[in-house]
Length: 330
Image (cartoon, rainbow, N blue to C red; front, side, top):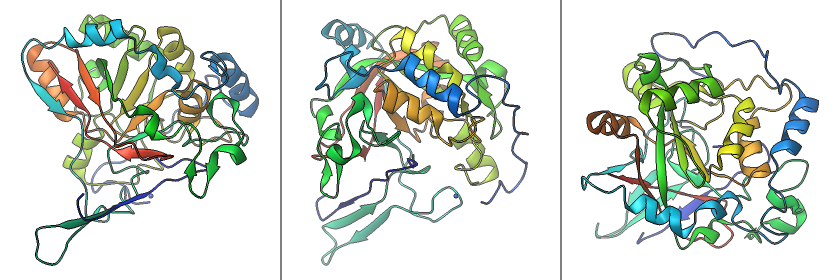
C-alpha cells in the first residue's frame, strides 16, 4: 500500500486513485463512533499496542519474532492434502483507477530476456511491506529516528532483507463475505473485532501466537464483476480498534486483498491508522493486495481454514518491501 510518508519502488532488469465501479456504489461511510476517532485517541492506542523495545533496542524483526521453531513445526503438520494455492494476483499491466502505476514487462532484443519495472506499493500489486515502510512522528518501528533509517540509498534498519531466511508459519483465512453470506463487502465497510470472532466461531479456528492472519473482503471478486475503482479512497477493511486484539492474540503477520485499512479510515487526521499501528507500533509486516479468491474457494472445499504459509521475498538490502507470491499449502 502507499504509506503517508514513504513510498518504495523497484526496477527488476533482464533476468529477472477517483473512479467508482462501473455498476454499484460504495457503501455509505460508517459513523466514527468507536475509538480511535481522532489524533489524541489514536496516540493513546499507539502507546497501548506498541512493541517498541519488546525484543530489544536493536530488534529488526518485530512480531516475526513470534514465529518460533515450534510454530514452524505446527505449520508443517498442517500439510495433509498436498494442495498449494498462490495468494498473488497476476501482475496488472493496464492502467486503471486502482492501478496508476502498472507493472511494465518489456522483452529485450532476441526475446529470450526481459525487463520488469514496478512501483509495487499501492493498491494493485501483491506485495509485502517491510518495517521501515511506515513512519509516524518521524520515527520507524522500535523508535528509530527517520534520519537514521530512511536514506536515499535504502533503509539502514528494518529492510526487507531481514526476512531473507523466509517465513513458514500457520496462516488463517478470515472470510468476512462468507460470514455475511455475500460475494464481497462494499467499499467503505469496516470490520470489527466481533466480526473476526464470529468467523472464528463459525469456522472452528482460533488465532494464536505466531499466526499470519488474512482478512478477505472480496475486493478482487468485486473488481471482476463491476470493474476497478479507486481503492485508495474507498475500500472495505479492518477498523483501527482491532489493533489490541491482534496484539493480544500474538499475530505475527497480517494481510488482506486490499491494504487492510478500511477507507475512509474513520480516524480524523490519519488516512492509514491500521498500517501505522501494525507496522510502526507493533512491528507486524503487512501483505497487501493478496488475491484471496482461490484461497477462499479452497478452504471452503476442504473445510479447512488454516494452512502452512510460505513467504520468501527477495532480500533487497534496505528495501521497503517486495512483490510477493505467498503460498498456502494444505
